[in-house]
Amino acid sequence: MTLIEQEACNKIIQTYYKEIYSYCFVKLNYRHHSAEDCTQDVFVIFFQKYEKLDTTDNIRLWLYRTADNVIKAHLRKNPTTDVSIEDNPEVMDIPAESSFPDDSADSQLDILTDEERKLLEAYYDTDYGQRSAAAKKMGLSLAAMYQRVHKIKNKLRRNR
Image (cartoon, rainbow, N blue to C red; front, side, top):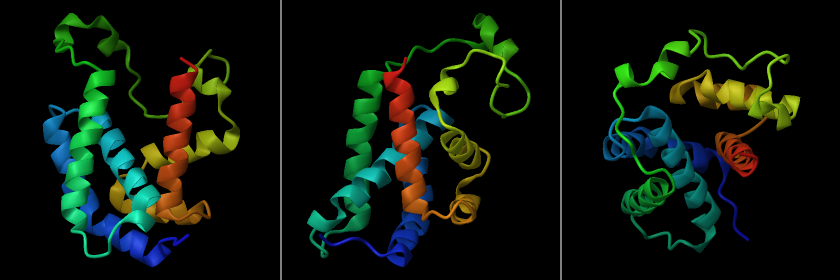
């Protein structure tokens, strides 16, 4: 089993992340969270399949093809419903800060361990350029951070 070295992993992410994110962002009608989820999934799939790839393959082309497949799967699971902000009263109730709810409120996040909560908080409170430092601070590589966030998201989806 050939694992990708952390330095090579970081270089691939730094080289292609913004480009793939922008592609997903446009294809998903400028929905930030959906684009971020899909971009993360693309890189998780890439690093899971890295050892099976031919080293002469064009990485950019492979990432775009994978992004197309991930976007299609995302749209099948989450059909878009274009709703005006004015038509959606819940939008007005969104808290200004981007922190997790306090422990007294019932939340789907209650199923997460403290470590999982801290990881999600570090992930969503930083933009891409700062995630590498956040991952390092938590003792993880950037790829490991993406993989753990992906697993946590799946755990939350299963608990719906």
